[in-house]
Length: 334
Image 1 (cartoon, rainbow, N blue to C red):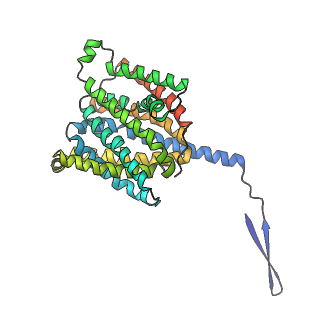
Image 2 (cartoon, one colour):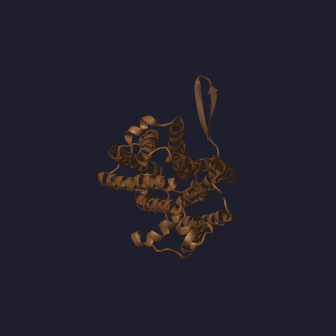
Image 3 (cartoon, rainbow, N blue to C red):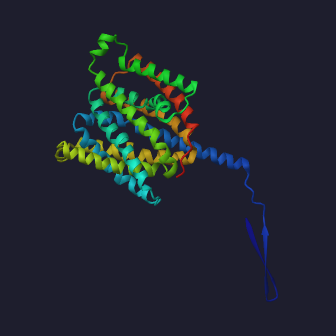
């Protein structure tokens, strides 16, 4: 820091510049950083709790709004909300990369969104919250095949625990004959298929995110997906249903679009830049827990002993897998 000292000697003004030692106190810097991290932890807890409400909301909407129309309206709103945040950086995306991001938008948004809505309409919001968020386990299964990545024993253990948990949740303690005759099995399998598609999207998005940042990649993928969803909505004759939406449906669509998709993702990407990918990813485990709680209290989805045991195994497995993968991933720059 500079301090300027003025001294008059007759008509001459002398200026002396005194330089003080301005090296920061390491303890003060560390304390400030830790305090900022705690603030981000509190924000992330709230955000991921809100994110978990997506599952019961989508369950309610799946009975009132057709899959293509629901996802078209959702991501149209998301594109509008994300535009100011994504475009202010003015990052130019190469043409070939735009094509790749658009394909990922089709896989990770169109297919995931439509399949998940159909799946949850045949299952429960509770199952959706648990099974869909097992997608990191799908990544570990596919990474050696599609990306030729080596998977550690720890990651394999996490995947094994996770899939044991999936089996427990899906079967809910029923025998094979009862399980095969269950009304939820088709829906649960579709939810797992949606999780698989999301896992593929996550794997191939990595190089684009490292190059352009997560927010930009998400925005362009959403724009492309919105176009595909518009074509699908138009072709399936669902577009007219937008004029017949109930007040409840409109409120829920705005909620899942603005809050659980756009807002949550903006905070997510910002938190990666502030506290890092590894620490941020740990908070993803809050999503299924929030989904289970809200589905139970608002939709009366039953929580059984099998649900609790299976969920714990899945969460432990996902945590082990995320730690394994995140230490290998470069943190995006925003």
